[in-house]
Image (cartoon, rainbow, N blue to C red; front, side, top):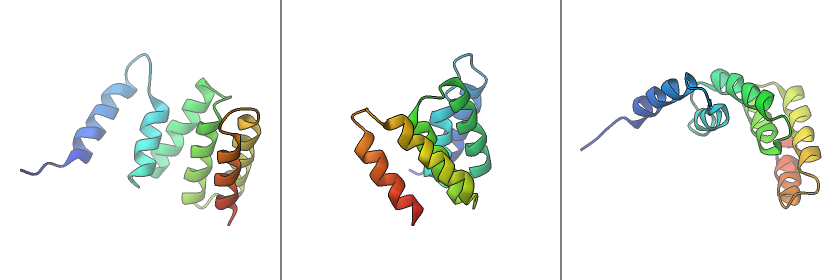
Length: 104
């Protein structure tokens, strides 16, 4: 038995995006991780950041998406923002290390 989960997931994302509590971050993460609809992932991560601008992990995803799209200046600025917001959290060292990798 075989199924194309991409279509099922995309359909579920489309339904969720029209809900009142929109999972923009999760949709952006899915599209980034599956290397699909990168421009839409960028749009969704920006909307997620509008809802929660202090979420350092969202800024990190934004940096990764921008890098994939070739927007290196935006990627660097977003990576720096994620490091700044992660300061003082248990994830601080991880985000500093991950963002150092992205600069290469």
